[in-house]
Amino acid sequence: MFDLFSKKPGNLKDDTLSGLTVAFALVPEAIAFSMIIQVNPLIGLWAAVFMGFITAAFGGRPGMISGATGAIAVVLIPIIAMGKKYAIDHGIEIEPIKLAEQFMFITLILAGCLQVIVGLLKLGRFIRLVPHPVMMGFVNGLAIVIGLAQITSFKNKTGTDDSGAGIYAWMQGNELFTMIGLVLITMGIIHFLPKFTKAIPSSLAAILVVGLLGFFNVVDTKTVGDILKEADPASKGMLSGAFPSIADFSHVLDIGIWQILQMVGGVAIIVCAVGLIESLMTLQLIDEITETRGQGNRECLAQGSANMLSGLFGGMGGCAMIGQSLINIKSGGRGRLSGIVAALALLVFVMFAGKIIVQIPIAALTGVMFMVVIGTFEWSTFKTFGKVPLTDIFVILLVTVVTVYVDLAIAVLAGVVASALIFAWKSSKHVFVHTEKETETEKIYSVEGLLYFGSVKEFAEHFQASSDTENIVIDFENARICDLSAIEAINAMSERYKNAGKNLRLRHLSPDCRATLKRAGNLADIEVLPDDPDYSVASLRAD
Image 1 (cartoon, rainbow, N blue to C red):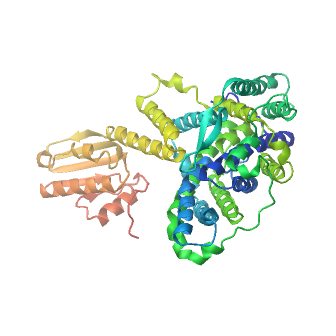
Image 2: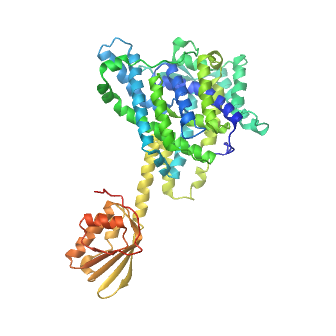
């Protein structure tokens, strides 16, 4: 998966140059995501600046890039539609899109607050529980999604449908061949340049070379300016904008804070969850590539703060950008400086260098992303067939398919749930009960394995109170009581033996198990021994 990514530590030069590389790639992405929710492209660009700078400077994963993302943009679509409808239905004297933007900004500020709370509660560490098959499926699906997203680069916008979404048609003739040729040139430079020199990131060199071909009109091909014109015809393909002031919330405040929170609260929760899942999965991926460890809770705090500030200053918010993060890592970016440079360079591009940036051919950025796809895909997946359990292969394929056809966050959740159910099913088959000693008056059982909701039925089937001896001892030294279902199973078994007139003793239970059983009214005798284990039960404690 990571053959194209070096594991060397970063330095000032590498961080600076890789940051510049990422800045070039951020421009069309931010514009494209603005198009998804049909807002001014500057809203996406300023989101990339705020998200990128704050998370790079204060986040938990140096080298990871954040900005406006497609996952967040898709979630925000209903908010934009809601804001437009509210403005029309209530006759508010403002353009519907302006009120919709105010709805979006409030949503992002609320989502940011929730993300900060998650960080303060230190819930980010739970991302470490994601199984490896889920991670493999995630990166495979991610690579496919990034690759499919580049197909639009080979199409031209021909109009819009009734919903306002763009209608695209494939390029034809020389235009298509030129596009393909420039993409191949970009990929060739990225692949071969490191064999001759590593003084400059190969991705940046490729963008500069192909960019100069477009700047001096050596080739006539689709540029960043064309993308900008498709998003906002009034811009005439120009990129410019003053630094944003605090967003206008006047009409939202007139509606009422409580009513607004009721309207946008649900979407804010989804934005919070999707942003954190995508960011923390990206953090884990970068950890594996760089063989270092980031801080999930710190990233939650930084991302929440960035979303709040982005919403306050009129940005569309976002989260970690997986493709741009991988570009940064591949280009040698390892420290916080790389993300800071990317954000500041994008700021300069928007405010001062728009005329140059709009002339960069889209082919150069497409070629860079194709190389990211090649480096991201877990090619060793094909070697796992026949060597790992079929259940692991199923989880990999499940996460990959859901990532491609639904959503990254939902794919991770589906994979974790599937892995948990598979684990529960397998563990339920590994509860063993052995007879250690048997006389006419006493029988000693030894239990081995995990006793929890999935295995209690098989555990109970080993004990027949009516036919057992008068005195029974059950030894849990090699077992572990995991949850309330296990406690209830032991309690029910104790009652059966009591009703049958038998004496049941339980041995080698932890103090927490003993206390929980006593509160549940257990009818068996519980022995307390010096070598009793010490662990807690996942139960509803009544302290």
